[in-house]
Amino acid sequence: MTADPTPPGGLPEPPTRPTLTREYLAVAALALIDAHGLRKFSMRKLGTAVGFDPMAAYRYYDDQEALLDGVAEALFTEIDVDTLPWDGPWQDLAREYCLRLRDALLRHPHAVQVFATRPVRSPASIDTGVKMLTKLHADGIPPAQALRIARCLREFTIGHALAIAVTQLGAERRSRKPRPGSPDYNLLAEAADATTLDDHFEMGVTAMLRGFQQPAD
Image 1 (cartoon, one colour):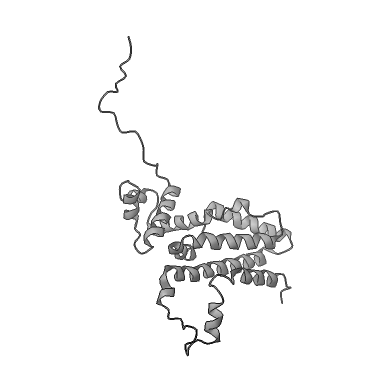
Image 2: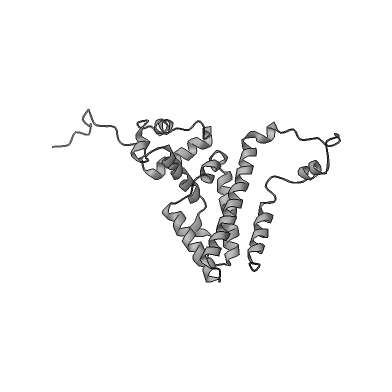
């Protein structure tokens, strides 16, 4: 007796939608924020966008603030901390971390505010912080001083990214820059035309790292 190759009717549709996880929802939320901006984002819109019950996100996050914490964690994962130069001098490690953090944030200008306004306390972030302090401590920097250094670099990097993100989101179009030859075209305007909003970042990080090598008063 041969089996009938025709499947019986009434079978459920095969699973084609992604299985929801906290990580998936955070990345999806980041994509929505990228596309539409933070002000237009909501958990209901996220649920609809991923093709589930509009309130499905509440099964994984207590509220929108908790979900935005997850978005900040998703941004942190883009730094790819495992491939940082952990075996080199701590200054090289710090510089590369700052560069990667800036680049990750500027890939998501609508979400820089999310990262800037909440601590990132994911296991990966905490492990990275401990590993960095251990690295600096091995080079003779006490943990408290190492944390001060890390905070200075992080705040400079995030502040820089915020300034660039504001420009990318349209603030520059609202400014009225004087043109060469106009009465208002002064030395400041000339200098601004000779620079970009991003070309001082590495200079700033270098200056900070050099300063950290000087003995404290």
